[in-house]
Length: 152
Image (cartoon, rainbow, N blue to C red; front, side):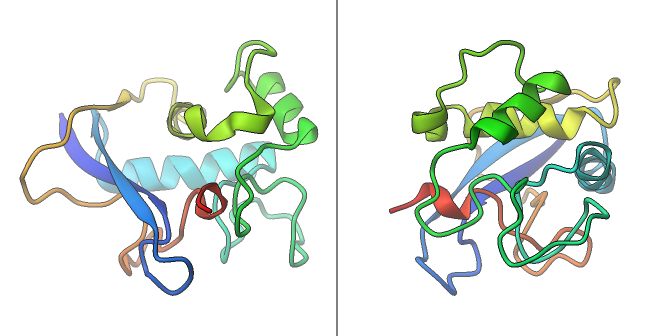
């Protein structure tokens, strides 16, 4: 199993400077997880990042299918909630659109797994170790922020 961090928030500290990392374990490599995220964006038209378009859609400044990418945007739109249910990321209507911060990590991990059903990608307790990041920190493959809008 491969260990890697998923970073939620402003890892580059060029905005509100708030972020945290989630230690994940996967049966896939870091690059395979990164590519699965991009493929899930392309397959669904939904993205959890800003700055780069992995959906292959023409984006304007605020794309309606982006999730928690704008400052203090800690809710999920009904449209995006319906899309996540349609694609099997969320299995029922129990997702709390107004308190999405509680569900964000698990929804994002499930979203990444959409592109590769054989992928195991689970969060786990943090360790002190040198572990790569799925996103951010100037990585050439997936240098984006997830969940920027979750912080006040």
